[in-house]
Image (cartoon, rainbow, N blue to C red):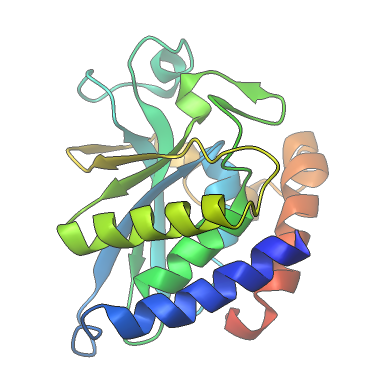
Length: 203
């Protein structure tokens, strides 16, 4: 993990200097990531300075306006994903990608831990060509440096549609912290995430 974190930080610095400069201040942008259970994804990215809002939902499938129960069947093609609304003047897309690769194991195909199925796949849904290039750059470099024991299986696919999940899924960890899944699955992962990005956390 230490090797991965160091490499991600270095790559972030390199990529920032090799792509177009950040948009003007107060112009928000969106990143759409799937890192397994969207409760976990939301809880982690909510911690970062510059992230204005995280919305849990579904993306990448062929069914319009799916319910959580339907997505859980694995028949919709959707992944549990989050729209991350952020201020590029405070946090860059490169830094969000760094967080993406620390927030989960991108070498696990169609699962994260005990959550199994295509709905839990690792995916980056890019909104423009710059996001696509950066995602592919990170994956190429991380694979070349053998940062993980196994190759990265993260999908890099165009953003087409995002369907917001039911209201009870929004801000889930903060509202349900004492539930077993939150306490024994999300909380330990969140603490690890916060240690890595301690200088990037909201006050």
